[in-house]
Figure 1: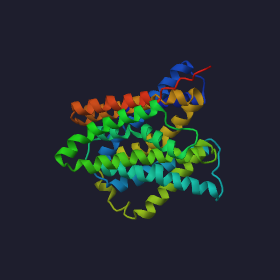
Figure 2: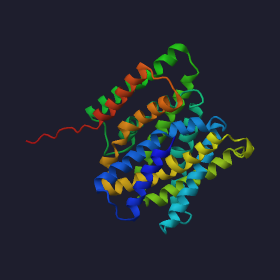
Figure 3: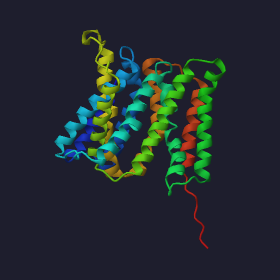
Figure 4: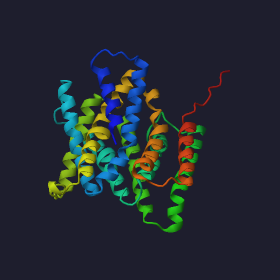
Length: 315
């Protein structure tokens, strides 16, 4: 199920430590493909984890495993976490808003909706970020393209939610939870931009440590199960969920930015929902619906439109 992401990540990690027979451009695209597959299939891993674990356990163990991996990466790179102070308060806020809450909301939402639909709904995150940036950031105001892109993207969400609204389905609550998770991610992005600049590896590690600690404090029943009762698929999936989309993806994310820039990385927003939707269909046998396909096209079109630049007029 996850052989290809492992292979692509392995190739990418080779580029970090040694000379490669591959060109820089090829390595960049391999890393981008690995990141897309890792994040795109995360909804599938959540689905398999939920066979046995409760949503709060999926979120908590995902954070704990991710924190352990990031601590190892931090030690490997000979970096240190900051001493107690304002930085840890910043990490704590990001941990709750952009990790703990959305991880739990997505897992809880996926108890009533498919992994593919969850991936489609999460695609609204870049558009939600535009609106929040307009409200809270001085230099990122809405223009006609951003506003048009937001409207087109929201119309895609309406196509997804329409059938559940008409049928009064329980999946409406799950859909709204995933949309709320997307807004949490967007809020975390905006909050991060208002903070001092931290070393990405240090900040990611500190954030996951805070999120893991908080999860064990608010959900004391996380360890309330017998290890011998855990099905292999659920245990394996939750380990992969912590290692790949929670920890390894962050390492790849920042490495791609350093190598190829943020603009190159932004291409993932167009492809992740496609991978999420069709991995659910191909691997889990989830039904492909025409209105979901239309919604996918509208959301991606909205992202494309929102990123158009307003032409500057010279006199």
